[in-house]
Every structure is written in structure tokens, then in C-alpha cells.
Length: 289
Image (tube, rainbow, N blue to C red; front, side):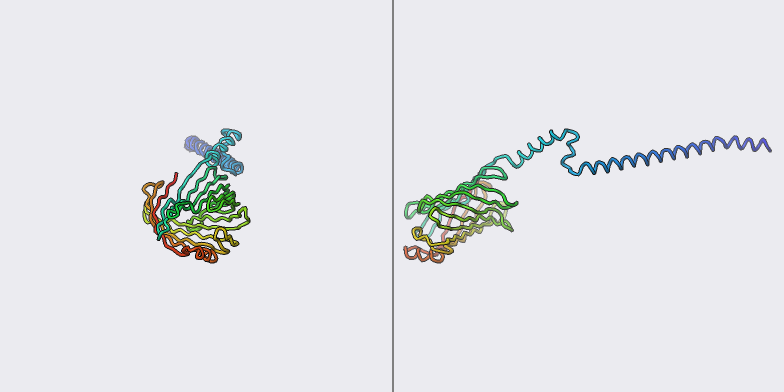
């Protein structure tokens, strides 16, 4: 009987040893895993605390000074590289009773996202009188004041009908619903204050056929008899142009425009034997580069 007990005890000893060892190994393994997880958690917390600026994460690999130079180069190439743009928005002939005319309206700019030099010119050549009736050129400094608007200041010079110089202050940009707006105040060297607002909208009938409503209104703060301009709103033009983009940079168009002289300016026009209200047919070309 004693021999049987000793035999069972000796037989069970390796099993007890193996079980105890496995438990110890499992316990040690669990402890190592917990410790490793705690270290990872600490490291993750530290990483979160030290990487509160996501754009600085590369600094520890390449060096803060090197990355600062790289970011400066990226900003220069992305937004500070001088670029240029030229557009003749209207090169058109207007046809009406005995008062046919050629109209030009062009502008261009050179500069960066933050600072641009704008050059604008527009005018009218009368086929009936065989002379330039109106002509002006503007040189403006342009600065963005929001995502869609620039403030513009500079000078305007009128070649015809009278040589005058104006100070210019205005805004240009996109109004809600993608209306393109150009509004400006003009103060001449004679002390005359006038203003002009132009607005247009491109309605895409398809990828190449575009219908463009356009409006222009002019205002004067005082009478300018030598220019046949009266106080108040002086003129209103409402037009509709249908153009076809043969290329985005080259688009012929046709259209109609109603031209109305207003207020005291209309009195000056009637006195001089002119028409205060007319509708013109037009065809022209829109190009840009």
C-alpha cells in the first residue's frame, strides 16, 4: 500500500511541476505584455503631446531648419510665383441706325496671389464720325481682401473725349451665385466724382455654348457740362450675348443690347440731337491668354 502511494506521488510530481511552470510562464508573459502595452501607451501619449502641429512631424527626421527652407520654397512656388493673364472680354461691332461703332473692353494683370498690377482699357470708335468717341486706360494695384474679392486702387487716364486723369478706388470679384462684378469710384483732376458698376454672368447651355447677361450702370455726383453728363445716374446698358467656345481662349459671339441715357444726362443728349434710348445688334470676339 505504501509502495502504491509512493508510486502515485512520484508519477504526479512531473505533472505538478509542468503545470506550475506553465502558470509561471503564462504569468510572466502576461506581465511582459501589460508592461509593453503601458510603454506603448506612454509613447503614444508623448507623440500626441509633441505632434500638436502635424506639419512639423518631419522636423525630427530632416531637421527643423531644413524643413523650414523646404516649406518656404513650397509657398513661393505655390502662391508667390509671379504670373500673368490677358483677356479681351469684348471686341465687338455694334450696329444700329446710322450709329455703328466698334467697342473694346480688355484687361490683364501681372503679379502674385497677394499683389497684382492690373491694366484695364475700354473705349468706342464711331464708324459714322470716323473717330474715337471714348477711350481710357487704368493702371491699378490689386490686393485680395477675401477669398473672392480684390480691392483695387490706382490711376485712370481718358484719351477721349477730353484728356483727364482720375484717382481710382474699387473692388472686383465674384458675388454670390458667381456673378462677376467690377465696381469703381473715379475722382478726376477737375474734382469730378463718378462711378461705374459692371456685372455679368456666364450661363452654360452646354460645355461650349454660353449665354451671358451683362449690365453696366454709371453715376455722376455733379454736372459735367463739357462732357454732356448730368447729376445722378447717367446711363444704363443691359445686354445679352451668346458665345461659342471654339477653344476656351477663342470665342465668337452675337447678341443684343439696350442702351439708355438717364436723368439730366438724357437732357444733354436730347439738346445735342442724340438718341437717349436705342437697341443695338452686336457681334464680336472674346479672347484670352
